[in-house]
Image 1 (cartoon, rainbow, N blue to C red):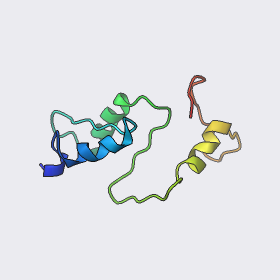
Image 2: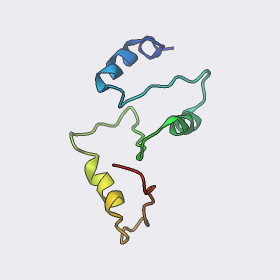
Image 3: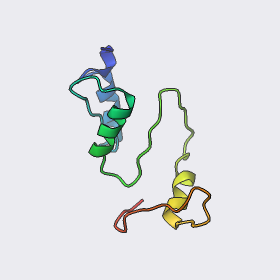
Image 4: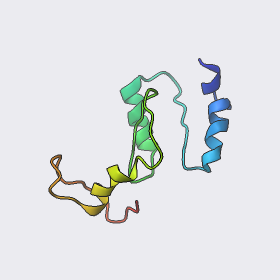
Length: 90
């Protein structure tokens, strides 16, 4: 296993700067990409779940324009209506 990924490694130290907004979960065994993401989704507590692969780079404030249609319930969206729980706060 890569040194920075082990429990207590550099990645965990790096994530601390986000004051709990970013969480890291370790599976007990290798699960594969899709199963690992599904496990992560079950652990999540937020209203919006975003997966970024290692090769993805984003700019500051890249997320709000993507979330805005969900918040405002744009029904003319070509991908269909977005469903959010009524208690969700984005």
